[in-house]
Image (tube, rainbow, N blue to C red; front, side):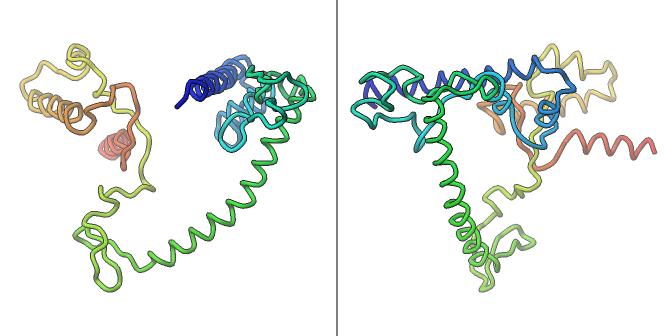
Length: 244
């Protein structure tokens, strides 16, 4: 990567952070009964980036995965001087939809929007056809009772389904509370001064050691993890069934 490419990459990263951060600040300033905020919060449609674009700034426009390149005598548009590498000269829109766009910002927005429409039209057909071919090619593949995967001819496809035996449809993002606690907090929350519970405490302690040393050796305790079963829901359901 050249110095110029490194400069462009760092600037683009900072500009994208600016749009994301402004979206977070914008949503905090909105009231809870705001219709757009409610729609984003419940997950029905949109994101905080959309809130940012409507109320704060539209942000960096991209073409072919990068900032708008020079195409008119070492400049993006006739509105700028030659070799102008400023954010606004390479596709950054500082205005929001609410404040309206300047003329040159409208041109940049049209460039990115046209590419988005083309990608949607072309990739929908391409990915749909690829999906159909994959389904037809793999429709005879079955998972057997021993966990191995075979086709209709009995040929072995995988020793374990998905190489880990986990069905992706059931994976959920969840947080393991015991994983991030230090020894003092862990003992305070889970140790009970009773001889009959020492065995359970040692088992929990050993489970946490296995998680830290073997299962998630590089992860920190605050990051949620993806697991095929919801541990808290299983415990909650079991507790309610026992009480019932």
